[in-house]
Length: 279
Length: 272
View 1: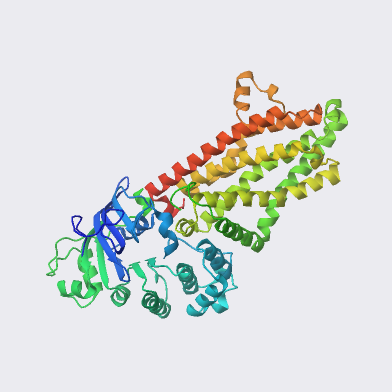
View 2: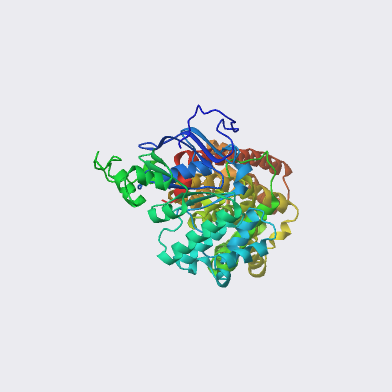
């Protein structure tokens, strides 16, 4: 379902197909020594959950960062909710939110103080009630007045999720939202994301290494390898193409260079490219 | 937080939210509060005793009573003003919170205005006890400088913000590896700004450099007031003009460094 640049129909301000939550066209990010993202194009429908998969250094985080406007593309275009990024970021930043292992919440502040600060930044109406609601939804009520730094990893993840949801975002970008969580907490977080999407019709873009999670949550999967899109379809279609029962098996096939018929094309270990290493 | 966005509407609610965030932090950490007062107090005690000793042994300094302590307090306004700005910024780097802010509707100019406001609050916490000590122990009434003090204060705080904005841009671009610049850059100005001695002490060619720095006008102005009892308004006007240029230049540098940080992907890490 990669976007053809020449596709007909209505175009957004960025010259991309309208009505998509995220539109990416011919996106490239070249760092000094490495091409982190190499000419990718896709559009993500509103109200969908899309998984962005790939080994370490495949370009997932850089792609998400370019969508958020944290990283400038070398070339290509990104539009979010119809607005080109980062030029019109101010128009959409209040409508989206994100959670990432690359950022933390201030540890000395209590959970309530953190949510209070971010709620004010996002101009959330009736903030006290919203914090109470998030406390109940994410089982944080008893933790609201504890310093964030004294919480367990699972509790911190729930706090980060509360921050990501505080403004009822239309678009939620999640980078490994259940990394380092125990199976019970991870399952609980997935359930909450499903509920949120269903209730609010939100769009979710999810980068994850957890194939079970992606199979459960995602309507669509984009697999990146060395900065390029190698698969883009529903999980069922991709598994059928590779004659595999799980996405994990497909992921290994892609990572190890096996073709869709199972033949080994090449052997490679997933490269490790952090933004620091690439810059 | 994509652009400085000076053309867009500034939200005082968002500036207030950021100030609230730093106030929560100060409230929750007594070492941070203590540190704000500790160094100014140490400074005024050390230099106060030195001035007492010198005044007992030199007629000139008896006439110029308070020059040293006055210089110490004004220097601290300059230095602590910049630190108050920069440390609030560094708190975001240390907390790995910058990405959250960059992805929020907070505009860079709002962020910088919040940092300026916090520098005033942090400065007040440090300087007010310092001036009290100077009065009680060394009989130097800092506020006795009168209305000229407002001109001195404004010029010093403008310079401290200009330096703070510039070094924050450096840290944004180069990560915490550039943190040492925050602590050291202002000290490079110290000998040139002639904090404790008149500009005429410097070699002639270096005096041109010295007069390019707004704090030089303030310290010369303070000496003029305390020694000759003359307030040099012309010096203050020149200092304001140079400060205006410095502030615009620092904003421009911050923008350029922010854009460079986005290009190099350094907003994602922010580490060493």
